[in-house]
Length: 366
Ligand SMILES: NC(=O)c1ccc[n+]([C@@H]2O[C@H](COP(=O)([O-])OP(=O)(O)OC[C@H]3O[C@@H](n4cnc5c(N)ncnc54)[C@H](O)[C@@H]3O)[C@@H](O)[C@H]2O)c1
Image (cartoon, rainbow, N blue to C red; front, side, top):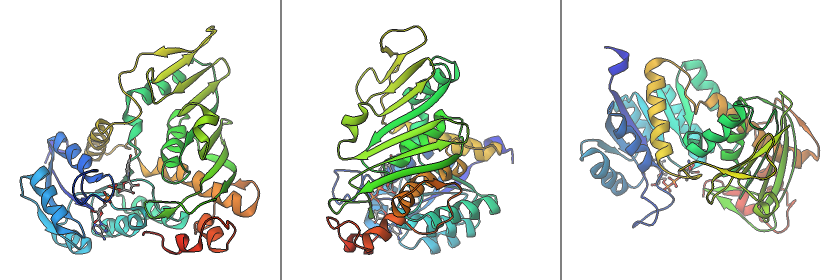
């Protein structure tokens, strides 16, 4: 068959319910994934899997005219249906076992939700297994496909701020949200690998996002191998400190990305003030997932590297775990990071943060 017209058999694990609908437990990220596959015109749903079969049934009616098979066990589904492409939309503690099982079952491509995994060891293993088996593995850092972020990157490439020197960001936590901004740092910065990281975290209260404990406040400073530096500030007060979502500082100017219009703001060479840059898209939106999945399918078909490749995600994930490791070792962490665990969970379990509890760390995934 001509690769450019091949139709792929697709399965989705963790169908969920859309946010604010009956029985929802999260955002129901599988739904925008499904709309993305349907939009390609090259994908046929063969099976959906969820621990709660009613969720998968409703999903089937909504996205596949009830034509896909329903499973509550992903291993059985993978072995029986032999899908070409699998989307994994469960919570992070299930990402690594599911990715590795899908690769073992012979799928060609896996699109997994972020963050990669709750430990650095699992994240590395997922990437390695898929690389060695020639499976296209991608993570849903979909913001790369929104106009505002692409405009910012294009302005850097055009030299609008001179030479890129520094990246800054603010968000709620290093792990669940920080994965997006650190991924974006890679996007702006030619996917340069990290050289070292120094960081600190605090946990004044128990806090979990999608079953994984996170800090209530923290920061990381990363030095990339090309000399650019990054600073991500998280949790309490982060937005006030940074004043925008992302900031790109160059030798001759600065770009900012904001949640309110104008989304992209520039003080370029010769400008005395920041001014808005035309961009109709904000910093969020499911259309990014539709575009990401189109890119995944096209890349699989053409044998090229997708924009959301695990090769990019593994670098931003290394910065996340290196930050927590910096807090554990009280010092600068050189790359590559060789630990296997999640240092923040270790710190919680050892009672380092009296305001948070060890129970939070003992129940990763719940
Ligand atoms: N890319 C983004 O912008 C973005 C936004 C929100 C959430 N996420 C990520 O998406 C992932 C999923 O979040 P969500 O909000 O869609 O979750 P959700 O709770 O809405 O859906 C998860 C589904 O997985 C099912 N499930 C659990 N264990 C299972 C198993 N063993 N086999 C099959 N199904 C199982 C649950 O029953 C549930 O229906 C998380 O990693 C989260 O961080 C990404």
